Length: 122
Image 1 (cartoon, rainbow, N blue to C red):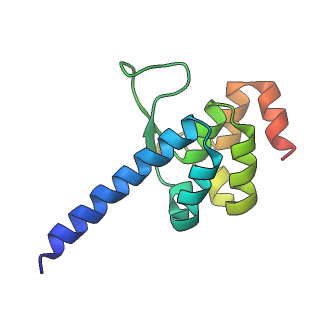
Image 2: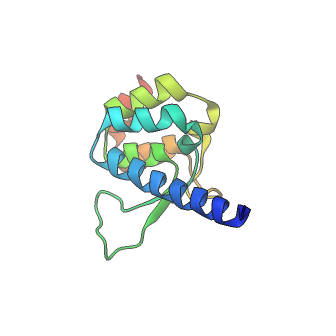
């Protein structure tokens, strides 16, 4: 059995799963995101590739953990659900690009100050 073919297929499937969760998050499909996370909790902190809410396909892609996408698109219900079910310090302390300069809470503060106040109450 060719183990390289198996690991490539697994890697390809994982990349597809990452794209699916990004699309579900952007469209605010809470049930889809939670269903995917229930079997793949590690996606909470993995780097996901996406376009922010103010850019489009011609712009540079962002690479951040899932919580940044929720914040950028202001999906408060999804943030609440993710933090309730999968809270760990790792989720809030993740940095943009893995070694970026700010955390998810700093990103929320930057995006909209009133939005920051709402998620602090979750």
